[in-house]
Image (cartoon, rainbow over all chains, first blue to last red; front, side, top):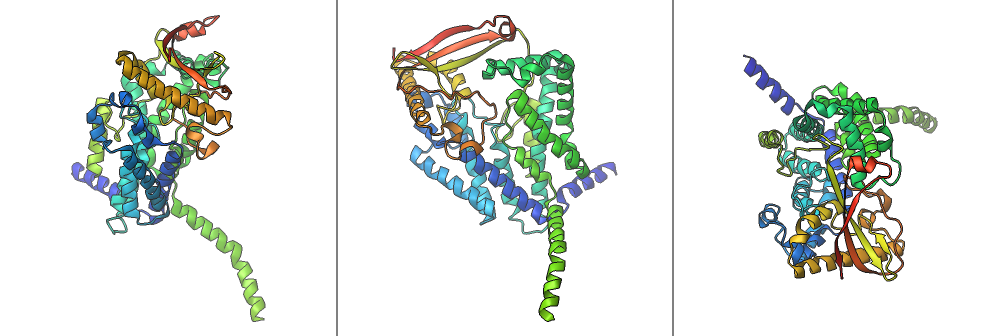
Length: 300
Length: 168
């Protein structure tokens, strides 16, 4: 009985209808985010014009996995195609196919940035646009009005995993000792030095002097990361967690020198249907009386 | 699709391994220590006057400095001399191209096309706004090592070794 109930709840979560405007907003945000990133990466296909001495150190298995097998000229054509596909996805032109092409090309080009050392470009901004656009391309093919709901929720789940997985990996690798003031103090100073910011005073270096502040940063950060997926199930919590997430990323930028390129994708959790309804309502009330006066004047 | 994505993420989460685009998002995990040896590479351009200049971390685009320094430390010392020289010649050429752009007041790196609204990389790195007005004749790569304890000492201590210079 309980198993059946659980199954029903899971089905209700995934298959609940979703307002089309929320799915469209997610598509626009994912495409805009992908476009912003690739416009910020100069000549990524140019990696393939590196000297053979460097390219030879990339294992063939990795090149096959990401289809990095074509000559640089063809890669440059595909790079242009990626821009076009993202623009088309942004404006909803042949949504299904443009999202599919953009997602596949992001999968192909994503690892270029790090391929000489690692084929895993996670936390470099491409992961969620790549998977999100692929998922949305499948959803837009269903033709069912409730269909895209699962795609939005799956993309939101992938996004929430960024926080949850980061929190889990801290506990997995460091245990509860990760929360200690010493650990955070060492991270703050070590990261400053590793990235080369140690020449001038930084916020992180200053904060490292206060053990209680360091411990508080660790506890609040970890609790926030582990609790973030709650926004998937309790929509009201979004009013707290989404602004908190923006603050979290600004603080990470100032203290840890970490820039989270996907911060704008937090807007996927906004109920755009509600926002649009408010805007239309406000416009109606602003324009309504004016139209009435015009009508009275013209009829008079 | 939901089941596939859930399965792949469960695997990367539990195994703590990478299978991009399915990622385990490890960030600042593990125990940081004062005694752990930290290292970085300093890429220096030496101009016609023999003065050395720190090269901007984004000068080697499309390569980013952090994967590049890992590659240099991991592969360059093991390479045959001829391959090593080719790789170094390429890096020197990239550094010189970026120097010319920066000296002419043009954007380099991720800011090249859309300027200050461009997306930086995950880890922000300090920029090098000053560049030589003379072409770089040589590329020097220094290995710098230290522990946090050493860096916090007064005066701070670090160990600097010349990894390679091209051309000699």
